[in-house]
Length: 250
Image (cartoon, rainbow, N blue to C red; front, top):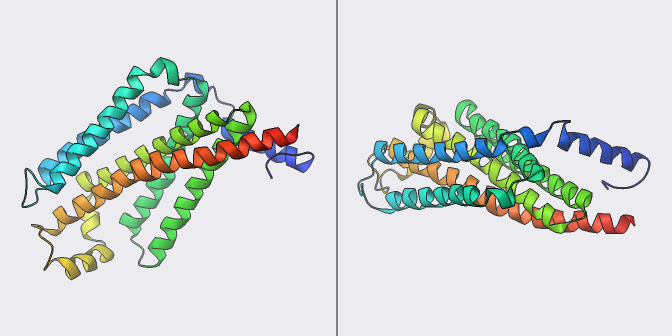
């Protein structure tokens, strides 16, 4: 339990120190950093679209995926800008800052896969460990905020913002590998085996084009599935737990 007396109060104190880090988050430019990451993602998607051209280029499913992702990311930026006065406060800034920190774990995991290139099933186990750690951090943050403020909605917001910020970091990391580090993807024994197995039936002009869009799909999944949706889901759970713990303390 996070809340209680004695040792449990010490645990609560340690958690608060971890989450607050004695920093004035109201002075941090976390939202500007998040916006900049999303802008960079949009730019890299455009670069990828022109650099890696499938047979169906300039149309086809790959082009549609690029267009939809750009529209969604641009929409997120527009909403963040329009509603900045209503949604941005110290708590929101802190959650974005924490999410950016959590996202560095995704960067570490993606770098392990593409630079160290562990084999299977070790790679899947590493992916699952990082996913579990990040999910746990988002959940703890949501519980903490809901408990401290006695507001379920603050837990939901915490999960949402920390989730989408961490997803943005992961998305950018993957796209950087696509645009600037394709050689590392092409050196990966797992990718080489996959391409050897499917190249006869895959309608792709080359291994680089194939894995550009495979990695792109993973990048978008990290932003919207493991970022937006997972963060919102964990925020709801964390908000409920935090609110319940606050109520039970009375």
